[in-house]
Amino acid sequence: MAIDAGTTGITVLVIDPATEVRGRAYSEFTQYFPQPGWVEHDASEIWDVTQRVMKQAMADAGVAAADLAAIGITNQRETTVLWDRITGKPVAPAIVWQCRRSTAICERLKSQGLESELRARTGLVVDAYFSATKIVWYLEEIEGLRARSETGDILFGTIDSWLVWNLTNGEVHATEPSNASRTMLFSLRDRAWDPWILEQLSIPAELLPEVRPSSGSFGATVLDGVTVPVSGIAGDQQAALFGQGCFSEGMAKNTYGTGSFVLMNSGSKVPLSAHGLLSTAAWDIGDGLKYALEGAIFVTGAAIQWLRDGLQVIDAASDAGPLAESVADNGGTYLVPAFVGLGAPHWDPYARGAYLGITRGTTKAHLMRAAIEAMAYQTRDVVDAMTADAGVPLEELRVDGGASVMDLLCQFQADQLGVVVRRPAMLETTALGAAYLAGLAEGVWSSTEQIGSGWRAAAEFEPNADRSVADELYAGWKEAVGRVSSR
Image (cartoon, rainbow, N blue to C red; front, side, top):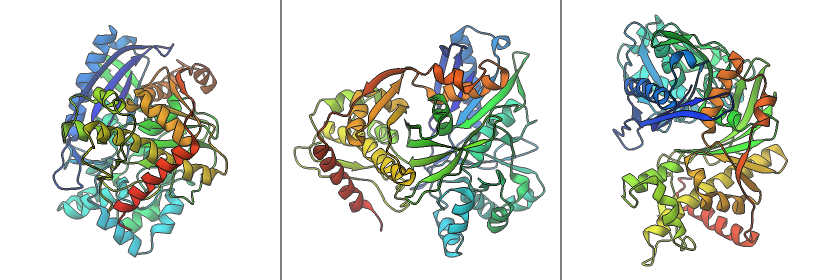
């Protein structure tokens, strides 16, 4: 059973050893936007939805708890939960990875001259995206919380830790390297929580979960009276890299979800970026920590959601592709979806979204096409930076996530990058990666070689646009980004 705890909903898959999906269930949970730039979740609601969807997926598969070899978890990363060790209840709403409320704390750290050392230790830029400054915000804003944290009464976790705590009835407070490396508290080289960072940020070590291998024991849960081990965890983007079979150095994938995340496997060495990308832990399956280079794009699919829910341009997300395909081009219109600032490689927290190039002839189809094309342009921004850092060109891009079902997006992406884009037969690679990690620990699969040999492409998109046309469109995108930049 794979639990995919995403940013807007919970998906649970029941997957057999042949990687066929036997059962599936999904449910959204509430998004809260209390102030401009603030995003919150109710962690208790996430746990309630998870329990319900687990039962629905098992019913859909027609299996009992005794049929499950293990449970794997993959999750939205960076989202920060603090809860009471005794009651098990959150002390406040969860601060979501998209939330910008701790931007001022980031500026304070920069003014203290800590940015370069934090980047060297963690592989991350100083940004409100990551968990560390979200924790600092809690400790500074909630009266009495710091004192309770220092005594061990308060626990911190990303969503994986929160789910493990609840699944094991409070017996296990743990995470693994891919999630730990997204907190800005984890030393990539030491492969542990960094005491120097904790001291600089005044974060009590008592808050933090134990860091265990990504594939291995995270305790067990009881379902219908049956004990089922929890045996694999990875943050959603690293899980997708694993699920895409990108086990060799230089292999890369992009996930088009709420945001988009391009990851390239860098093997056993910590990658260094001079172009605004992140170094991150990929996974530890017992043979040593593996690393990746990552470009994090804050808003891609969320722009489609906004067009659906905010502007009511479409009734359902599935209408996006057909509407965009109803026009031959974007009509000169660009959307820069900087709703919560710009991520990699720009890292501009003060940029805000804009449509540019609108004329009297602009239709909702042009607006939708611009939103879809923005996914590809932002991906090109990251891939160009990634190939500059790696010093080698990208040979192919494996894609997944909800928006990757759109042929228009995949073809436009191939045209922009000038490389083949491959879409797998199993699109839910994030959940699949979690299942693989859990299954490896329990002997369902014997090796990454066995897993990799089963990867199959359902569709391949060769670049067929004239390069000068693709580059001209991209130049328009870069001009649009310059218009919204705060710098």
